[in-house]
Length: 484
Image (cartoon, rainbow, N blue to C red; front, side, top):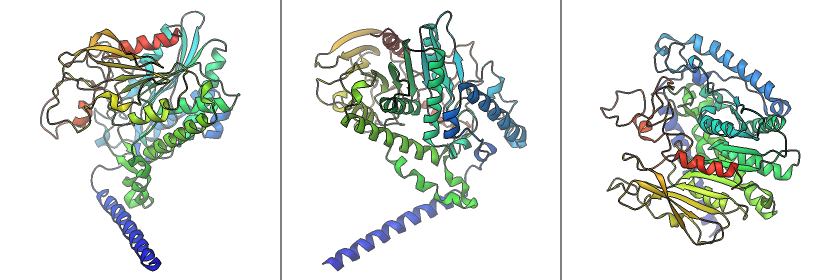
């Protein structure tokens, strides 16, 4: 019997190994076709290391950042082949989307100073493949409320996507520590210190706050605001590293990439390397483990209130992880989760995936809960107008409040990328500000035509890039600023 079981185990392991080797061989073979690696896929700029970041000041970081952009210009922009000197290439100096041509290059770290004496300070962190552009609107609002607003370009971002092939999530955390030191240098306690994190920046924000519970040398934020936070990612990310194994052979270098796309967005990478998925998984796994450990050791009682904004459908991060792995761990400390529901006045018909339109109640444990929940949803199934459905912590009672907002008729849901942008954003907005032009309008509506015409992936244009409920988001952030 033991021999039979052992033989069966050997056969099983052999079949698994054969399957993996076959899959890798197929991936290597497929990589020989398709788009070629461009200079921005092969040139890897040298960022400050984790050790250097822990010794660096904000001025050191900005100086190193300036060198990075100059070296990138020399190594990529000024060495482009003629076929790469096209209007949609962000690395071509003659392109309308060349970032350096704008009044402000939002790929770089920035500081916004209020008029008069600061009321507080906020650090804002962007997401994976993004840039400080992502959080600029919220930064400006904090500035208008009297806060010094710092937004740091995370290591490996804002330059070339190849930089993401070597970065580690610990580099981003070290950079976060550096930026917090600068924030508290500019505005000291007891004036309030807020942290705002979008996507991966949300994961780094929360990881930093958990570390600060154990290390008194780290300044603890007074309030945490998360936007589409990367608490959990897809299961595929766990095994993404396997997809890059063939890249150790130069002939199969393209297998180090999950996507090789034209770089037409001035403030976000479109190409996506395997290492980025690997680091996302490692960061989210570490974060979840830290949350469990902090809960067991009763340290979460000292965590500041967490206000999170999240679409109920998100193709990038796990919504269930936000609810269970984060909010399921939090104590009764005034935290709240704000969800943007589907537009349920839309007739989804036969094209919607099973389970997507299930009632929201299935996402949550039974009330009462230790955290509050607010849902921005249709007032009823026959109208685009929306209401706020709010359930305070510790109660099962729901309060309803009409909002002076509505779903645009063509919008069936928000998306991961939509949450931090108003509809007037010059790049992603449905009604972009005519005075704000970044060379391309990615929020354009009603685009129809034949396949194969655009350099832009048609699916990316269908994904909503702005938040029709942004005024409500700002209202809730104002309440957090005011301590309400």
